[in-house]
Image (cartoon, rainbow, N blue to C red; front, side, top):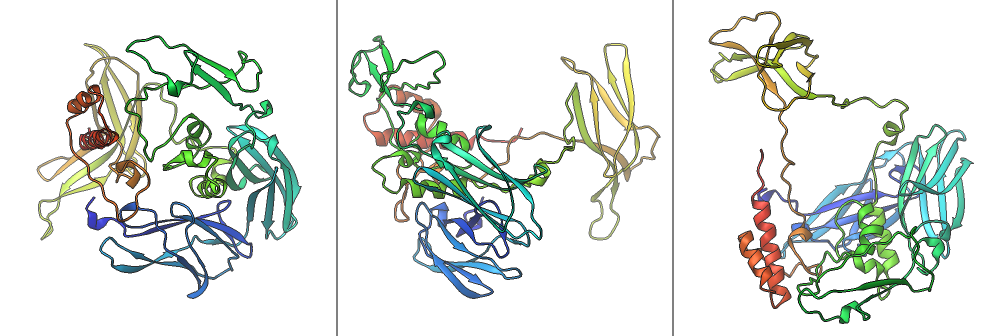
Length: 478
């Protein structure tokens, strides 16, 4: 993608629960990015029908939130003035999500040792609703109630498993109305009721961080619970061992704790995820809440997912599936387009498919194309190579300027995409005044550098960037 095509700014909104509903107070999270994908820090102005309604500013990695009550029929827009790398200021305008005329808004908050849920609705008549909290498919809390404009209830935080939990509000026919991800972090990890405890790990009888080894020396690792209780066969443990030489301190900063409890449950990339579990970070809960409101936000059409009958879009394959289209190809005789080919889909056309089953026999089948000229057919699975042919069941007139053509669907590798800023820039989050560069390097040269036990973190970081450039440059369609 040409640099001139890159957006100078982007502002994305994430209404808590999924949607804005007319007349119901809503919390809206947002993420602001500026030039080159850097997180923005500029103030954001929200306007209602062109009149200033409120002003807000990002609090963490371009993320922030505000509370307002949308009105039916009103138009809401956001304005932000960004400064580019050349010092030039420009005002950008963004539209807020559409406002639903009817629905429910869900607010989830943590108050001490309890989780509080507030649900507001504007339904014309009372409805039976259900509320459930799920953790990786396991139910942690359930409640059924009747709408009464405002409903509020709470439950003990200790009743939920640690990590990302999903709150879902749905009507009595199991059609979800709103969804919200929130993170449960227990103050004490030593309570076995939470399924998470602190461990003591020693290597050859000492702290692994202080261990000095000779090449190929045997290492005995012992793991025990800090609370003195035994580790049983039912214990669920994860352990990673790596060489301290060449250890990188980068913006990726993931460990088993951040991956298993946070990163694996959310969309997108989280720079320096370990900061949300750092006891020295006094704002970690507020920052993690913004991460849940943005990276955990979903916009699925739940009414489609909850349907009792799901459309069979991709049937189970019992052999080799062949997909394509049948066209009639003609030459254009109009002035200005003379000689160019016209492709006319042949709909509802009886077509014949022949495939050789062995050296002597041929298997024949017929089918009709659909209203768009497309077709899907299956043949028995086989190994090796076989000759097959497609042709109209009824002979069609062909000549110099007219012919029929079958176009088979091709399967390509994933579409090319623009790398996220943090995928190309290692290290702590960078400000706008900082810069970096990528050095192209042969992968074999990178491997030789690794074997030399590079003396500085900067050398390793440069090699990592070089390896990324070399790999991305080799992508191609097949």
